[in-house]
Length: 198
Figure 1 (cartoon, rainbow, N blue to C red):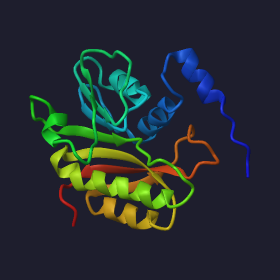
Figure 2 (tube, rainbow, N blue to C red):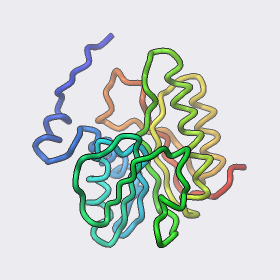
Figure 3 (tube, rainbow, N blue to C red):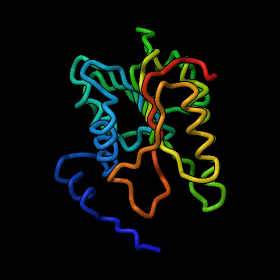
Figure 4 (cartoon, rainbow, N blue to C red):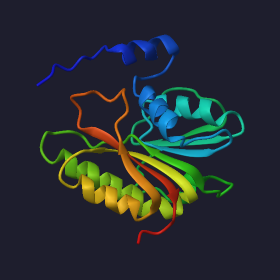
């Protein structure tokens, strides 16, 4: 099994460029290839700790957009006024609390969430998290909107892609360059949200 390199090029770049974690480059790559986020968009970041995706989203949406993040962990970092962070559980929070006062649905929903890894059943717990996201999308994502969610690859992965495809005009897997080669993580990207699953 290949040795895991902790301080790779992305770790060093993150330190040099002021990102809170190397994971920033996963989202940068996702957005460069899939064009998920535009200036002025409303973006929801699920599992937003430690905050590097919030930083990337803020750059992409600019001052006219809105970024909302939620995580079980507290994030001890200050962001621009149009970035809002909520400590909580996606599966328990009222979707209205994520939408805010405007009540406007998001243009893009992102998830870098992962279950606590034990080496046993991690893939299925990861798929379960993704299914929870898909269940809530009609209350969070506007028609035509985009999704990118992390999942650990395994036997249930093809079914999850098919389920996502039943809700989007296009749904495909994508592994960013910054994902470690030894990791089973990949992302399912959905474009053109159609609403309730078929």
